[in-house]
Length: 213
Length: 153
Image (tube, rainbow over all chains, first blue to last red; front, side, top):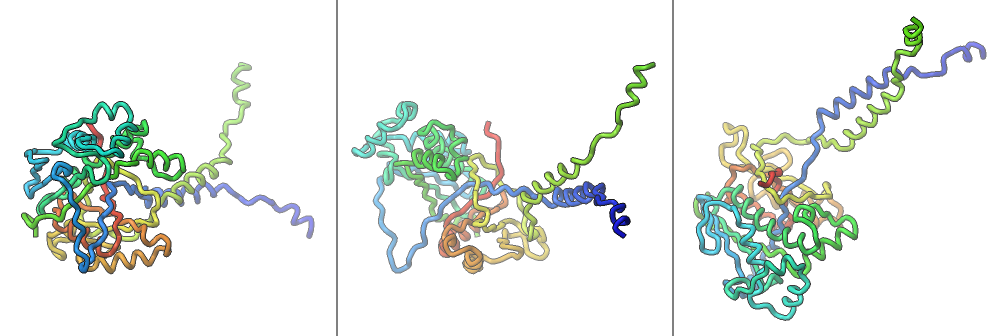
């Protein structure tokens, strides 16, 4: 008896293992969709309590960068008519970096900016006071008939202006800054340093009831 | 002559014992990255192309809303509709849907829920703003406008 056992082959035939693995592999290859959760992030404002009147925020007209998009997808940027969004991010950047009427805090912020941004910063009193909160707001207003793509394009351009400023502050390109996730403390620190004092103030107004349903 | 003889002496077979390991490695890669699609998409989905894209890290926090013209126009009409999970819903149902999605998350993560809106290019702003209003009501304020990348020129 013992002899018989000993004679039997102790190895499992593993030749077909590769075939089985191949079969599974092909199944997963076919069913896989490498999920791409990419997009443009937006934080909506908190909901309004009907019992509490909306807080009145007094902002000077010069501190608001108005972008209107009508139902024909035409743009009105700061009162000027435009066909498309080309160059919009540069204008937004100029607006954000304008120190028309800075207070002490804003001056400190100005001094902390890198040279390249400081060179860009203008001191026009007709434009925004300073880039800190309450100083510069970008307002996007659409009609109900505006196409989503154009709205997103405008939003994209405004975000681009912000990312370029943030990136430049920490010595990264806008692209590199955007890919920071804040997972590691070092990345988080970079992100915070880029954003510090310049909050992303993008206001999206309730659309007009024109051209929609 | 002797040269030829030597050649014939060498083994002609390639060792294939490591092949299953390689295949298994590939298999595991695809098993980990795969996301089995649990719902058919009933609306048209041509995402807009944008430049300033950001990636979301925590996939578990994301819930998807698909907006677009229904593929089956005979049944659902041609107006843009909202799809959540695998059914088309009305704007008013979003509140309920968000609360259901929130229930799936653990208590600590509930306020971090992110809604990824996959909106077709052709949609107008009207329905979008309605959805955004409902999301504000439902207190799901983190929003991602899903879009594909575009090469800047």
